[in-house]
Image (tube, rainbow, N blue to C red; front, top):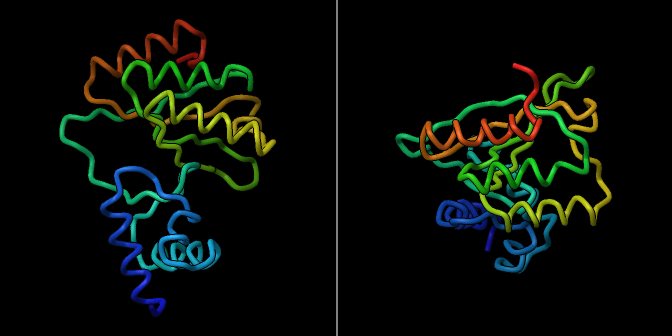
Length: 172
């Protein structure tokens, strides 16, 4: 299969996928190396495809569902409380869309997370521990932003209330 055909099939594969797909899994499907897939994804993104790179793999951006609520919150916590913050959001019905920090040199650094369940949070935390990488909010003394998405305003209010009660929200 030539590269252009493979990229078309990767695009179709990601459009149909309900969960993120790792570069390794895509590579196995096409019998090529992971590096080839990373390059293909980079070319697709450069051509305007809305492909997100999440901690669990690649995911095609989709239009939001009508009625969903999305809000950006400012939070702060220690490394030890990162899981508690993420669990609070997903347990109450939210999705942690991304995490953003303000860097003194690079400006805003935003990374997609797309965490919607305890399982996904557990996998994210496991990867953090295994890699030894420091959380993004370490760059700012724990201060960061999250975009949270949920089904309705009541759910968002429950999430904000719980985060406030646990001391995660930066003073408003």
